[in-house]
Image (cartoon, rainbow, N blue to C red; front, side):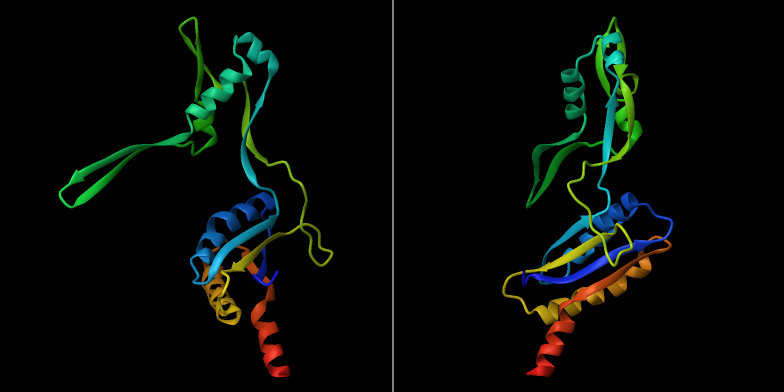
Length: 201
């Protein structure tokens, strides 16, 4: 596709595929999306980190709790809700409630049910941990095995040479801010293709 203007690998010694994917998704991609002319930054490869509750059926039975009780408790305790707005003269203050989980302990401490006046917590029903989302593929490069990669996509109608240069400038600014040992390594930059084409013409 002609919208694929910039492709790169996120490399880092001493970092797992899950850590590298998290760095790409939460530190690199949001900053590249702010580059004018970039419509999206796609991530591929690595392991997408998820919160996993590995339930022990014997613990469910012992605590008289169903899987539906557990699913309901997790859903109720991880959401945001809008509360409207408070008008103050020409200004409006938006009100919302945030109840999003931010750590494994937040999940472990969710109350699933009350049995004989005693709360039953998620931690009593199974193990809570980080785990990779079930994968449907992988990305490799140069025979080195699995990689974590990203691809900047250009907004239709933009100038690919200009946008590619802007993405490259952003990458140069982002690289020094990444965790120790992690770097962005470019393997496709549309600017190279455009420059060679212009030279040939």
